Amino acid sequence: MSGVLSHSPADVVAALIVSLGGGTDPLEDAAEQARSSWPVKVSRTPDRPDQVLVVTDTAGRDLARPHPVGRRAQLYGVQIKVRACTHAAGWAKASSLAELLSLGANVYDAQVALGEAAYVVHSVQFTGPALALGAESGTERRLFTLNALVGIRQL
Image (tube, rainbow, N blue to C red; front, side, top):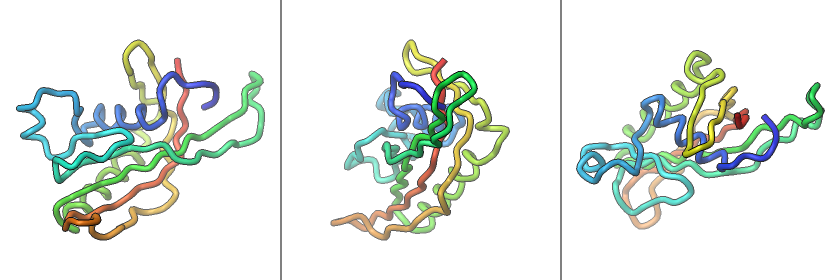
C-alpha cells in the first residue's frame, strides 16, 4: 500500500477489472473487440466504441502513519468512467462494477500482472455511489463515474 509502483494505479485497476470479467482487454484482436461491448481503457476516452470503461488516476490519500516496517501507508485514487448508449445501460454497468469490486472475495489480496511487474490489490473503497454525469458533450451517450481509493502493493 505504499512505495513506488512501476505502473499507475489506473493501469492496475484496469487489469483487475479485466481479470474479474468486468470488461475486456483493449489489446485483444479487432474481431474480438467488435464483439465486446465493454473494453477497458486507461487515461484516454476513445470516440468508439460507444460503450467503454475508462480508468484514470486521481488524488489518493496518505494515511500519515508509518507501517511497522517503516513505510507510510497510502491509498491510491482512481476514477472509473462508464460510457453507455443509454442511461439504463450505463447505470446497470456502473452498479455491477461497484458490486464486483466491492466484494471482498473478488478483491481482497487479488493479484494482477502487468508485463514483468506483479501487484496485490488489497482493497477497493468507493467514496460514494455511482454518479450520473448526463450526456457526453455533442452526443447522446451517457456518462457515469465511480471514484475509489485503492490499496495496492507491488510484489
